[in-house]
Structures are given as structure tokens and as C-alpha cells.
Image (tube, rainbow, N blue to C red):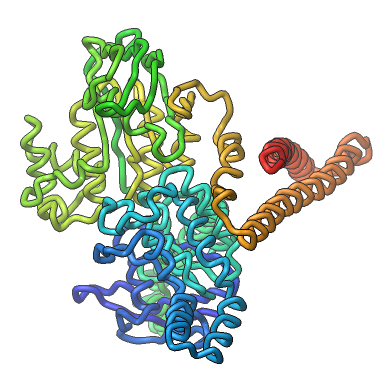
Length: 625
């Protein structure tokens, strides 16, 4: 197990951790959450030995192999495939040994090395790297490109791919979903769920956490609390704890008042001196319960100055692309007020191309895009974080774009989570999340009629993502969004457009249907014609394993449905029995009714999941034949 014992640590002479203790058991998947600045990344750095605690100690089994995601790796001239394969240092070293033994004609060393290479899975080495690259959105054409030729976001994907190649017992991932699209995130949590070691990750995607985590570790006020389950379970447990702490505090206040009244009443009476002194000492020893804070740090909204046209945007037989390359061909679509459109499509399908056309940053190759006269467009894209004026502060960025008073600018920025000295800190010193919030704040200041958002949740913490989802949901205008955060999509989007094979269509399913449709594609994308006979056998074995995985999950759901069905039947009989109604009090009866309702909803959810999996299995099976 991994243990932090009574950790004390100061940052810039300010206490960050004060007696932090934490245990993570082997095989668990733990997600660390908490507001920006509470020390999530610092905890990783302490664990890796890059920082030393002021007091306390950290321990984990010495034989554990640790793999960690590094965000910043210098550009390399290694090909993407070789860069990723470098993650498995053992096999890479064996390859060098085999090459050396071959050149020196050392048969003994060659035989030993080849045997070890096979035992270590060397003949699946390249295939494993290619599968990871495909899952994270790379195409076969990308494999030979130098690492240095990829953009910053894609290099981070390569860093993640290399990390996943490392043979490890213990995996540390800091924000692994940043710079991934929806399809890559979907692949990643399937990969992580199959990982047999211990995972500790920092993430701000609540659905991703729900699907991965066996426990959530919440950092707050220098200490850590562990909650079982994913993020949804954490929220429920934390809400209960907040209520419990609040009740305890009220009781404590009443007790303090009662003791204080006794002291005030009898302080002057000599006959009560001992009792008074005893109670004074009791008051001095009493400590207030540290109530868990639950104030939302963000209180912003989006609004528009204009009335809305019908439609706001029209695409007429439109073809989008670059130069001679057509990305999306001859489509006709409309965007209306109150539309909440989520754009789906695999990497390279043209999602960003479509958003650029809506935002008037890309002219169509053919046809036309008409944006109505009163439709002002607010466009958010990741590159805007890099073009913020680094020497200016958040205050200056807002002040120069508004006629608000100084106090109003402060209040406006406060709603976006900027307070104290951060308001006047140069942008170049802000974190990625702070820069993203500033760009969104400037966007809100424009009061557009149509919001066009390309991955707006990158770098944002959970509270900010929740606030953004709520603000978008309450926005009177229209929203078109590309995002990998499924919680935001589920909360805000009322229609999906799917870009596939150069065409756009309205997607009638939900995100679960889309993920099921993607599953065979992102799990196996190897071209079997390019594989040798041994690799083909391995590939067929991989496909058999995938079919087994489908079957195991379907069987698990069927068992769960049988159990639920039995309990529902038993509850129904009890609720229909007059003796039950006669002998149960109201609270007990309500509890039975609530349980019956909960089981009915869970049964419906599992049945929908069962249908989706069986359809995916049928499509996958058809693809094999």
C-alpha cells in the first residue's frame, strides 16, 4: 500500500499540508480532487521525491514500478512510434542487446536475449504501441512523423502514450484527459479499467472519475479525506458530512453558550469557584468543529444584448475544407435560438473546421454560410489562451474592453474566480485554468447571441466545469460545442450533429450509443493485411479477448438484473400485503417505496446498457467475419 503519514509542507512560507495522512491500497484506483491551489500536483511531486516534506514520511513497496505522466518533454526527432516504444525500457534494452549479439555473432547471448524478449512480450511490443496510438487518436500515417513536428497538445498525447507503455505496478496521471477528444477519453478509461496495478490520478472530468475511481481523495484545508466510489458517490457522502458537521457545530455552540452562562452567573460566588474554574478550563479546551467549506467559487452567467433571429445561422449546400482538400461536403443545416448542439466525430473528421466556419474564421469552399444580422458570435478555442497579452493582468484585460467602474471590474472578475492578488498578476504567471477562465470571461463580456466553444473545459477544475455547464444551460442564446467532458454534454446539449465520412447528420442516439458505436473502432484499428502470420494470430487472439470482454460484461449485467428483479418482486409483495401497510410507520413505508423506485430506475438503466452492449457485440462480430 501507499501511505502518507502526518505530512507537513509549506509553499512560499505558507502551510499547504498540516498533518496530512492518507492510505491507498494496492490495486485501487484513486482520484485526487480539490480546488486549484490545494496541493494536488504537490502531492504527486512529494510522492515522486521531487519535493521533500517538512515533516512526516511517505512509503510504498520498494519493488513497485512507477510510471508517471510528464507534461513537458523536450521535442524529439524520434518518430512517434519509436518515442512511444521507448516507454518500455526493458524491451528497448533487449532490442539493443539482440542487435549487438547479432552483429558480434554471439549465439549464446542472442538465444538468451531472444528467449527473454519473447517472455517479456516482445513480439507484441510494436502492436501494443500502435494500439495505444490508435486509441489516443493517431493514424498510421502519424507513426513515422518526428515527435517534434506535432503541436503541443498532440505531444502531450504522445507523452501519455509513452506512459501507458511503461510496465508498471503504480500509475500516476496528472490531468490525463487534457487535450484529448471525446473518443480518446472513451478509449482511455477502458484502458485504465483493465489496468491491474494501482492508479492515482488528478482529474476534473466527473464522468471520467465515476468510471475509473474506486475512491476519491478530497484535499481541503491542508488535510485529505477519502470517500469510497466515484465522483457522484463523493458528492453524496460529502453533502451528508457537511450536514453532520453543521449539526455538530450547532450542538457545540449550544454547549458553549450553556457553559458560558454558568460561568457568567456564578463567577462572583466564592461557593461556586471550583465549578466555575472547572468550566472555564473546559471552555478553553473545547475546539470548534472544522466545518467543511462548500461555497461555490464561481458565480457567473452568459447573457446577450440582442433579440434573436430565426434562424441564427444557415448552411446552404456548404462544403468546408482547406485549399483543394474537402473536409465536410455539401451539407445544409440551421442553428436556432435555444439550440444546444454538441458536435461528434472522430479525430480529423472536421469538428473544429465546422466551428471555424460558424465563427466566420473559415470561408466555405462551395455554398454559403449565412449568419443573421443580429447574431453576434462568441468563439472560444484553445489557441486564444496563448494570444493573451502576457504582460497585462486579468484586471487590465477586462478594463480595456469595458466602461465598468474599477469596483465593477473587480466584482466581475470575482464571479470568475479571480480575487486578491490574482486580479493584478501578469497573465504570463497564470495557470492554464486561470487563462481559460479569463478567455471565457472576456467572451461573456461581449454578450454574444451564439456561443461557439471548442473544448472549453480543458484545464478547468470541477467546480468551474459545473458552473460553466449551469451557465450554458441558462443561456438564452444558442450554443455549439465540441467537448470531451461528457457531464457538460449531458447537462447542456439537446441535439448532436455527427460528422462522419465527410458528411454531417443529426445523431439520434445519446452519448452511450455513440460510445458503443465507437468501441470496436477505438479498440482494434490495426490493418491485419500488414501483419505477419504470428502477428495475425496475436491479432485474432486480441479480437477473441474483446468478444470475451463483451460476453463477460453482458453476463454481469444479466446477473444484476436477475438480482434486482428478485428484490423488486419481494418488495412488491410486501407493499401489496395489507399487513405490511398496517404495521409499518410512515418513515418505514416511505423507505420501502423509495427503494422500489430506485431499483426500478436501476433496472431500466441496466437494460439500456444491455441492449447497447449486445448491439455493439453484433456489429463487432459482423466486422470480424
